[in-house]
Image (cartoon, rainbow, N blue to C red; front, side, top):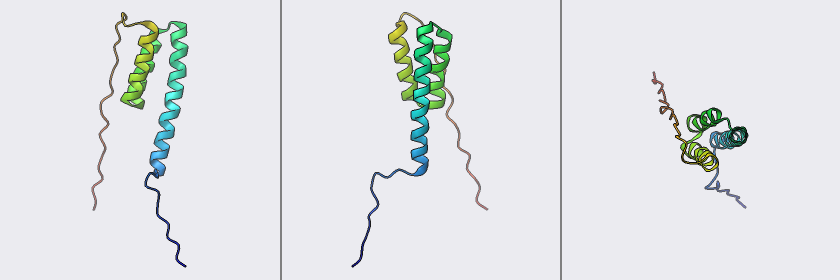
Length: 95
């Protein structure tokens, strides 16, 4: 009797799992900090947290944080966010 196993098609690599875990943790920390800053009325800190969402997280995270801030403070406030430049990946030369 021969047993053959087929790998699951939706299996994530350790790197993908690590990245997903990091982004989930980052989103939780930034969201909590954003809510705190909004309650305190610290708009400078709110902008910093939104910028960090874009720079260290993802466009989706930055947009989610910005939308939360706008819903709380309102759209009458001028929001300026700073997008981080795309990281360039260095390629190793194979010798």
